[in-house]
Image (cartoon, rainbow, N blue to C red; front, side, top):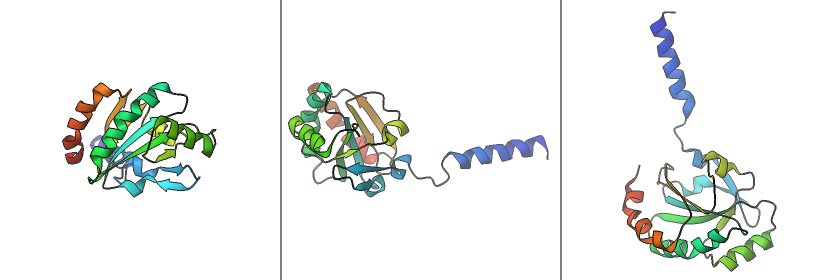
Length: 164
């Protein structure tokens, strides 16, 4: 085999080994709801997906909720969903429900019990807002969400909805 054939073969193998199905890594994940039922992230394919990564002990996570609640209301009637992603697999269902209520969350949350989502997208802190396009492409990760961030986040909607 010639050198150029080897290089061509190598390039083709690299191309197809990266993501042969072409499907987003997001859609390969399943997380549990607070009842322990598995929820495939594939259920959200075709929607802009905003994920709020949070924990009950995280005071900045609690401070982010009013901004996220406002965004959630703005998304009503649009092809988008906001989900909380709790990172406390050791906590009980009741503890998670109480924390979400104490934080003022009305949007649903899932539990990243094996840190699959956190690891897949290299989430390095909380609170984190992760935004995915309708095709599951990672658009944005923002750490720390404050009231002053709302106008810029809201202004990003058009970009989020038109992103591939």
